Amino acid sequence: MKNWIFIFIATVSWYGCYSQTEKTTKMDSTKNDNPVSKADSSKPILSDEEYKKVLSPEVYYVARQKGTERPWTSKFENLKDIGTYYCAVCGNALFKSDTKFDSGCGWPSFYEPISKGSIIYLPDNSHGMTRTEVECGKCKSHLGHVFEDGPPPTGLRYCINGVVLDFEKAKAAEKSFDAEQAKPKDHS
Ligand SMILES: [Zn+2]
Image 1 (cartoon, rainbow, N blue to C red):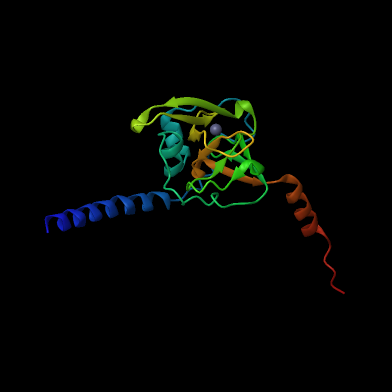
Image 2 (image 1 turned 120 degrees about the vertical axis):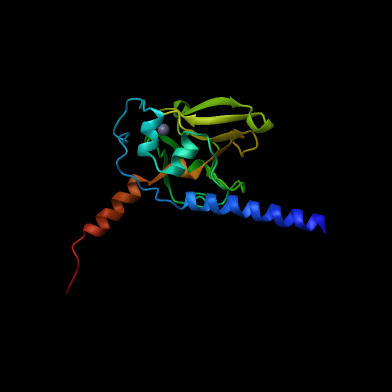
């Protein structure tokens, strides 16, 4: 009987935490007053207070407080579109869609960054684990971790929080789509 009471209490407290996270992740993520634009090529140096003001709560939590989004919640996890993934904080190009793969881990996964300098690697010994943290090479925002169980040719798995990614479809596809839209309509 005691066991059942314990399970009940544990479930209730778990659900409490869960709904809290749910609320947080559903908050508005579209803040467009971010001064760190894609056009800015210099390294952005914002204070923690400034980041807090310009980033949505969920981006701030992952990017600046090294948080982790709940698995299976990213809209990018199953996205197959061709294009480029950018840092949602500063617009730095991070990954190409052709290096993305289905890892089944619950977070968007890539086997290779877009360039050597696009990512910074740091040892992470938190939570009793030895891992390698990956940060944006431009604004040093936390992105996720890299593991050595990825597919060829690198054998690496960059396990990235989707909330700190921005996706842009390939320019070529975009252009042909725009051209199609611009064609004069035949009303005959
Ligand atoms: Zn960045």
